[in-house]
Structure formats: structure tokens, C-alpha cells
Length: 187
Ligand code: AMP
Image 1 (tube, rainbow, N blue to C red):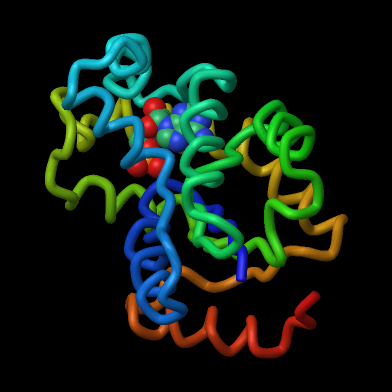
Image 2: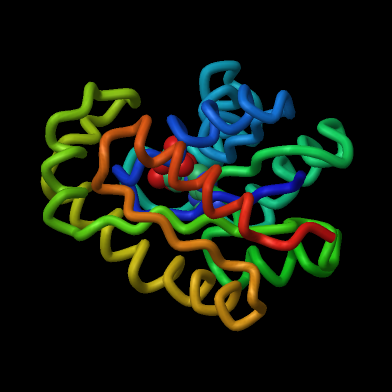
């Protein structure tokens, strides 16, 4: 089982990826968590991506792709990948590297912008800058629509997309994902 999770900020990607990783007993790969650990460790990569993360902007594709790629190789044939690919450039990099093997299915956690705004404003700050800053929230939502939605359409056109209503409580979202996956043909 190789799953990719996509969703707007606030859609619960991290929570759902953790729940699915536990359910299927497979590694959970989170691009955001990998980048945050580089920032915390003060690596060269961490120093390069920190300003983007602080501004709520996407980090350069080749930096993120390199770190995610290593994690995919380390994880082996089964994983839950969350937060990557987030742009078409990243989707192409991932495809060049892994081809169709990247994902058996792509779960899209769909959430109206207004609900995303409320959730992000209520979240605890995780980074040095304040995630709850309305300017940063709007930037992240804009980037989702401009950069990540094309990735959602791309996987839909490939027949890999499973769309889930992410406005439900977390447990109901997990159950809906597991139900939907049970109906998805496996390779
Ligand atoms: P997340 O925890 O997924 O919200 O990611 C936190 C931050 O890490 C994002 O706001 C971006 O700055 C950066 N980031 C995570 N994943 C990616 C990605 N696939 N491409 C570019 N930047 C990313």
C-alpha cells in the first residue's frame, strides 16, 4: 500500500496520515515534518528552507524532492506519503524518479476555505513565525489553489484520486478513507 495524501492547509493531512500509517502498519512520510526536522537540526537544507516555511510559502521543489526521495527509498515498498507532491513540478520530479510506483491511490482531503481558515486560526503555532497570522493563512490557501489543485486534477485524470470530505471529525474522515480504499482496485 503506497498512498499519497493531498489537501488544503488545515484539512488534517498529518492527523490522517498518522492514523493510516498506524492502521496499515507502514511508515509515515511527511514532507513538512522532514523539513521541520532539518530546520530544528540546523542543517544546510534546514537553513535554506526555513525562510520559505516562515513565510508560509512552498520551498524549492528540488530541495523538497531530494529529502522526500531519500525517505521513500528508506521506507521501502509500503508507505503513507503526506504533503508531497504539492506542485506539478514536484509531481513530474516524483514521476521521473518513481514512475507509477509512487502511489496506488491518492487521497484528497477536501475542505472549504472558510473551514480551513477557522481551523488554522485555532491551531497552536508550530513554527518560529506565527502560523495563525491571517496573512500567512491566506498565502497558504492561495498557494494550495494555484499550485496544488492542478496536482489534484492531474491524479483525478489518471484515475488515482479518492476524494474525502475533510470537514467531518477526524475519526469519521479516517473511516471514510478506509471505506473508499476498500472499494479501490489494488494493483
Ligand atoms: P506542512 O506541515 O505540510 O503544512 O508543511 C509545512 C511547510 O513546509 C509548508 O508551508 C512549506 O513551506 C514546506 N513544505 C512542506 N511540504 C512541501 C512541499 N511538498 N513543497 C514545498 N514546500 C513544502
